[in-house]
Length: 541
Image 1 (cartoon, rainbow, N blue to C red):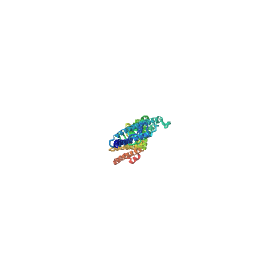
Image 2 (cartoon, helix red, strand yellow; image 1 turned 90 degrees about the horizontal axis):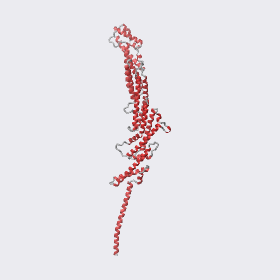
Image 3 (cartoon, one colour; image 1 turned 90 degrees about the vertical axis):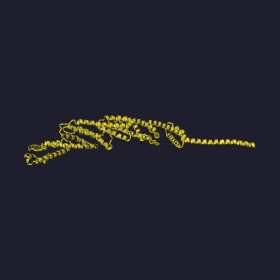
Image 4 (spheres, rainbow, N blue to C red; image 1 turned 135 degrees about the vertical axis):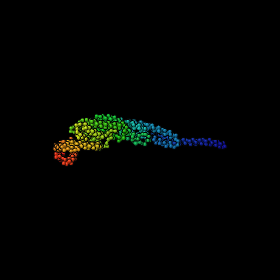
């Protein structure tokens, strides 16, 4: 028994150690299993599934691709939270791996977007919803979005350019509408159709770009010095319209160069100024190729219009003022020039009634101001022509100048844009009328042979002067003021001037009559018999 007890105790001691070792191993196994479970959960939560990684590395972009991209972003967000809790070496490793996977995914997305963007060079290609969604995703990566947007703009530039050329030379499907080039013989319509097409294309391209880019999935981080999204969109729109600029410039420039009529040039100039305002309202960058072309064409057409008006003015001046006609009438070439000016001003006033006045090219003169200067030039040339004609009497020079100025004023009356010029010239007209009255009064005084300026009155000389004066009154020729102003084309003004001159002369005569009457008994019988009362003289005149 003692031996058995000894053996049993020895066996117990041996099995106790084994049991203790087995318990330790079981505890270690449980701990390892827990660690494995935690590691599996950690990797599941903080790393990308193999299926998602495979999907993001593929070339197909669909809703599953975007869902995988969302999971990458969510996993990165979880890792970002983990980084805030102590020192996390594993989290840093996972963060680097996730960032690399996300960068690879977005690079693949960019390649897909750019491949789809090239298809947009064909207007018949519909815009896929996935493309819109992909571009919205790229808002979080401005550099990638810029690259994609630039490719889209390049593709649309090619498409818009091809469409514009087709509209110019082929027209619509089946020839309806007709090719724009078919109207090249009607310059205003030709230019207007091209500008209308460009404006429609601008609106459609703006809507397309807005629809493609849409709103970002999340707001991108601000970048110092980067243009605002709206500015970037306008720049992309300007790129899409670049291909329109050159063919538009060539055709409009040719139409302007071949047009001679100032009224037609004004219509082209107004069209260009109007559409330049519309394009500026879209906020296309002023330094873009398209806007630079539009502004250049505005300057070209405006300069051509002013040049045509100047040429017309020079021709009219050369034909109208080489000599003064005996009738002192305004020369016929003047009427032709004023008819052209009237046409332009009517168009100008109509455009102001319907719209705000189009802005002329920077530093250029407005059409109304230029026409006002032309009218000033005509008045100046009329004055110079009259002054150079030595055969004319002073009052005839004034009558000729009034005959030229009158139609200028009449033509300016209906136009509000010439109100200031008309007001300034009315004072010149009044001054000329006053000068003419003085000149005619002096002529009548000289032809009356009366001694208005003599200090001493000699009876014999006075008798002779009164006799000659009475003879002139009876003959009603030399003292007929109405006859002197008969060549004034404004008959109402002529009657008014004749009346004023008569009143002035009668007043002078009344003063002379008073001087003679004051001599009393010194008046000779001959003088007394010849001296008429002022009232009689007024009646006879």
